[in-house]
Length: 127
Image (tube, rainbow, N blue to C red; front, side):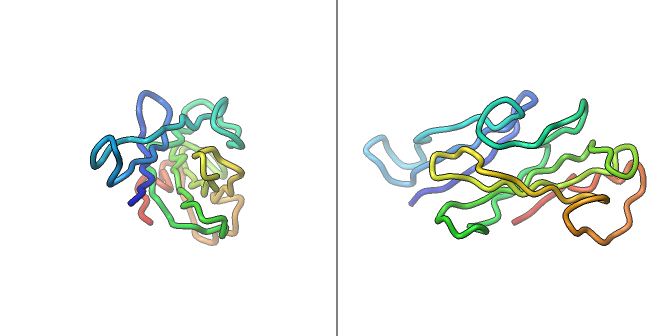
């Protein structure tokens, strides 16, 4: 059994590939990758205090490449107003790196709800 886990740590988030059974024992982390603006593949351009990764959820395989994809909050994003927030869908490769993303906010991604300054959309995510 293979499980992808994403964890926020010290201003960045990490994607872990864990195996349920292996020569190393159950629950062993097989590999990990740091995903940030400067590492891990195609990532969004961030502004100060966007807080990418404060909330992360495993979504399943949305792009049909056989690898689960992730949702990540950008709760401090300022699209439409201060700290209105956003969510990113990050599409992953088998090695854990991102191949692309879709941003969902007040101004992009087809979101039709109303957000106010300080709403911090994406603060909590689930798959």
